[in-house]
Length: 403
Image 1 (cartoon, rainbow, N blue to C red):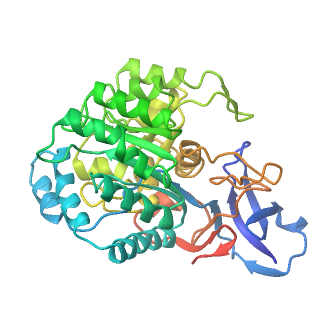
Image 2 (tube, helix red, strand yellow):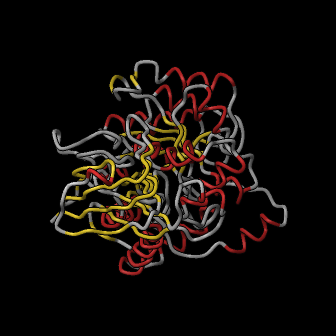
């Protein structure tokens, strides 16, 4: 069955040409985009949907979340708002609650968070393990994550559990735990930060996970200067996330990682995406990641929610886009691109069409997955012009109406 979305006031493709079409239309056929262009030239379809002059975007691609958890960390948040510093240690509170929650309830909670994200326009998302921190619990988290999210990341290297030697735990992360989660995960991550994993421990984790065939990501440079960005670039990680504290050398290493990539053709050696997490920055009262500086240096940027119970309990990508425009120096187009195409690039899902059968997400083009976000506004500018307003009117996920 085909569906014609017509009377689209503004259609922001975020494709290779980054086109913005006016008075546009788009045809969905199954899970794919079959046609898009001027509404006056639209082909016939089995059904028609009048967009009423509203703006149409790709669905948000949220490339960094932590959805598999139980428990509450409101007290920690209140203490932080009262002036206490953020440290990685609060993860242990969530670990205990998660371990004490059964599979059914843990899955139900995660599905509820996914539903909240979809209701605000997110159509493709990643989530991580990292609140189990032993072999059995990490494998359980990965298995549950594989049933609720589009991409699963192994984050056994989130925090060293209380009472364990850090090097012994790193051995576990690189050995039996990795073997247990491998059937469910495509990616691996490490929290390379003070209070979490050292440079040498992070290096061991990245090497073991790369040897196991997993794609790599890094939590880096969140709480201060550190080796995370440099390690991410060295290991060819798909993304390094947080990036609040960057030296000139850090920025140069990220920019250099893309030197072999043809941005227009999307070909050649891919580099490391800088993923900014503005909701987390505000919650932890860290300086906002320097997205403007990174873009100006030629580093592709993604925006993601970092939805988690301790430092960013929101899945609102619109909030992240708004913050990027109002406080981080990005234009509306740049912020929307970071929250759609940028997230897809960080997950290796920016390419694919009818020819190769792996449909791209994060952009609107013929052959790409029909992930669509229709705003209750005439243009995407309203995301920043009307901050905090519920602007999602309709959502299609792989061609299926989800809201």
